[in-house]
Image 1: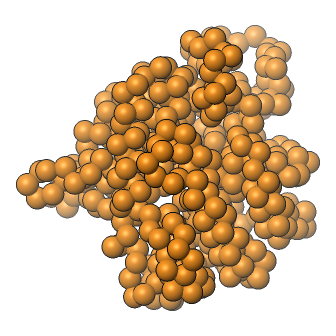
Image 2: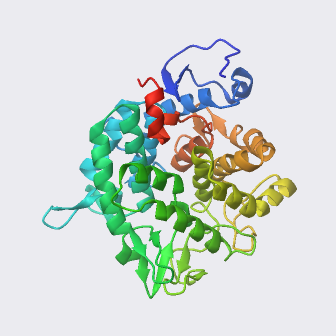
Length: 408
């Protein structure tokens, strides 16, 4: 329950998970004392208002200020997912339309290739703003489709569901593959022809989203999305064994013939280490635990967070990047990682989660932003990590519940 303890001048209101919060950014020194943050809804409402103003243009383009002002499919999808959770249909529509207008992949004759999004858009060397890399980042399309399904239910928009189904068809065709080793279907980070080279697949475990695949199965009976739930847990469990301490990797190599995982070659620009990508594994697995009560999710977190738990208890910090042996390769920390770890430890060890919250996440928050007002990645991952487990109404993840709920 939200409780304000000091007077505030109200400048804006937003609904998070059905709770309307009206807030103004307070100084960091008063935040913890002014708001009872057991489920963080007032903080999340404040952060979304600040993010929307700073990072989302009037036309719906999401700007990554730390990366030359570029835009990505990831950024658009994150904004859509946040907007539907925040019950903000206007921002959802703007960010969706910008992406559909500017990120749709086309051939040289300007004919659409599919309904998926090019991952990077920005200013080229000649000063023109356009698609800079037409390749697909499948995690962004997964997050965007998830947002479309949830939005179709929350706001009763059948057009969003139609678009989601069209994208699901293309995602299955372009970014999933059946492996000869076990005849199972697996998700790839993007187009098969890009990530299957030199007889090995390049995989990114942080793209695996079992909770999303369950939602996809609810709306698309033509493809076996539940098979991706099983292969995702297999990939998570087996690929983490490449690390002696059980850490997921940013990138990993998979031999499709025998199903063996290994580190990528040292000459590859994609690195097999625990870093900014890999930390998202904790959040995606935690979502499957909280939304669908999946026992494999809880088991994975319990089995693979042990090294980071020990590091936290010994040092009260976890570096942003670790090698496969669990040793630091940088001396700085990442608020984004702490957001992901908070979501995971809340599932298996709430006491550790509370320590991370009070010692890392809240101290990094000031006037609506984590770290600073240009830290795009921190804003998104800290926000997702702090979402209360019950923030999603039951009918959004389980449509059979709709009959018993009075929809808005």
